[in-house]
Length: 213
Length: 324
Image (cartoon, rainbow over all chains, first blue to last red; front, side, top):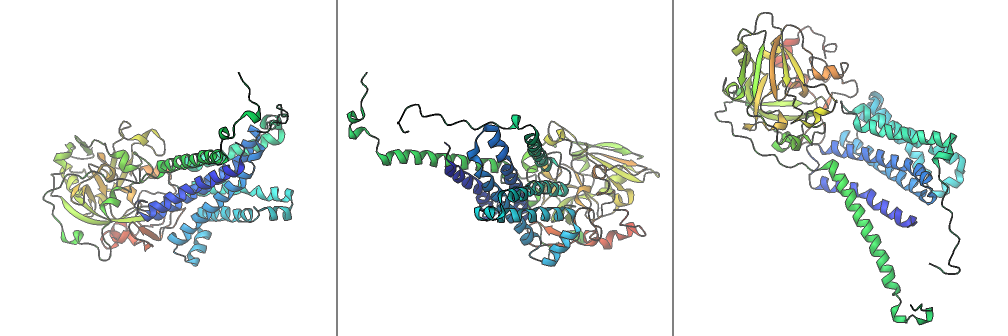
């Protein structure tokens, strides 16, 4: 089942399911009394969710000793960016009806929008540098350092969410908690890799001689 | 047991290459469909489209005072569906779309309301007696939530002052304190600690006696559904929506300013007065504009929610930035 191509197809389809349902509900006027707010909130949560999943790929593949899972990190991260773009569009389009002046005033005045906008802007270079050619051009080490910004972007996203809820902070705090776990894993991995990695299972020497699968 | 050598396997017994691949493809297709359905199901858990709640009981003999019942020019009524499926009622859920389904079985009869404190004739009313104190009136009011959305709602009720007259406040009564039922058996979110329960609210006595201040028990000609605060709620149209306390069980006349739930939760963000004021922002967002439910685009928020002519006098000489 180590079929990365199929796994990527699986993620592609599943990642588009929420968008399809959101669009369908919108088309059928089933988004509730405040469709703009719902679409904005849903795309925002999905962006955070995919970014967190993307950051979870490395710990998962190391803990399970499955290095072939690595390419999922990019795919999930790009999904996070994609929903982030939609989130920004719902805000610009619905909330501000494309009034640029109002947007800049809002960014300057509202801490939660400033934090959200900053987090989004942090993601832009990551999305641009996600293809192989840019990685080669940047060089692996610089690329890795650049992509640590993803942690900052998710932290910013959680703060952005926390700042806009009235009293029920459970969802933003959950995102913050998961991010803390992921950072904790990184710290542990740095100092005690013995406990955080499992060597990939060695491919068994072919016992059946020349027999092929 | 005969072990066949490859040349013993008849050509007809070898799985056809096409069949082999189509089985693999079938499995993949099935996995794709199953996981997609799973994801869709998961998504629906968070986005369940809201249904239609059962109709209330028709309220008979509604009178309509000319000045408050007239539709607001250029501001159509918000639909019953939207008014009853987009609610802040944290005892049931903090998700505005979830309140209606979770409040569906809320029991509002029998119901008593204790009215007392600094009153000459304190009394515990059976709700059915209370609503007959005065003829039901239809009042079309704007409703502005502190979150930045608004509605236009045809309430049915009578002025709170009618009830206060009944119990006769004492001379030293300066404020009115209200309390919502807190029943963990019926209100699932009370187990969470998002707010302190029971929910409490308050008004200055002159605000409580103002003719616009309504004790409401109906909506669109019918009794209130649970999610809108059945059986009895407060409506103060020039204040942010959370001042309109729901499912009231206690009304007390008191001498000092009573505590209020949102003020206790975040004193820097929600004051005792909570008058709608486009010039005083919430610390985290602007109050200049509002999203009128059912419309696209934003409306400008009006001073005292458009009731400045009637209520500005109550706050003459007061610094409204300090007394938010």
